[in-house]
Image (cartoon, rainbow, N blue to C red; front, side, top):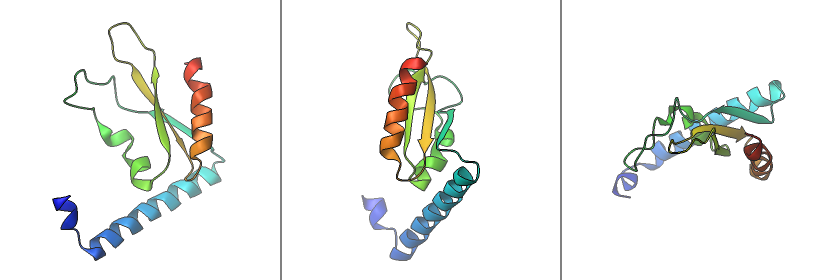
Length: 109
């Protein structure tokens, strides 16, 4: 909270504009390619064990920064081994559609 209070109104406005620009670019790319649902790895490998780290966030940063809905589902669950993650990303505002797709895809993988 203290760090956030140090951000000026202009800095916040610039950050929001940057998020909107990325969202517009990703939305345009999805529309141009006629993509409703994007599937991508959630991380470069399996999740680290323990609670001290969540792994490399680079593969989900674009969607998070753009405010696009994304969900991660486990893939290839093996006994005693953390699963790989598959993230599904939908267009901005398509949260309900994303959850519907995820509920259909998760049991199949």
